[in-house]
Image (tube, rainbow, N blue to C red):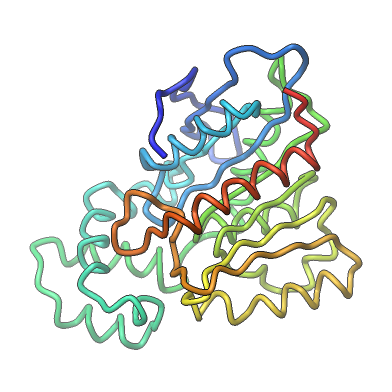
Length: 278
């Protein structure tokens, strides 16, 4: 999945919180304005993996911006690289099936020994235990959409979103609050309340792992809302895949066959609904 970086760079764009850091990757050559995609990172932040996915989308013809949502002041002091690294180490000590069991995680945190316990607890509370300021993050993502639309060479009428894990939930939440022409959810949580789906303007695609019970067992609620509010929704469930199966830097969860098939579905969905024509 790795590939040469193409026209990618870190930038900053103006938003509610001031300047937000982001990675942007552009197609090398376009004969006409290209569609844009807002790519939203996992709970562990704007990683090299997410930048690589942005580059892959750019090679497919999409101007792609991946905001560092953890760079805003409300979050930056808590979800630091040190604290996130400690959180990742802690999470890797847990059985995969218990990673989203908040009671189990809380008990394991009490017993976990580290020299950065305060930072770990703060990061875990914000990232995994309901402390994330999602309404504020929606505003930062709307700022990313506005920035994309302002760029020369971007088709302002064709903007999509895609995210993984935490970012998958934020992708659909953005589509509930902004005109997004095609929304992709990789194993992300449903909007809360689910009635927000009524506001979605474009089609939705959900991609899930069968072994990701906590997330995948709630997809029926999103499907029901899509039916209730007459929204286009398509879904793919990979029975043998776990949470984060697309991330090829995570040896514990990566599923090559599912990831490759999912990528083809991503390209087909965006081509159909964003009409890249590149």
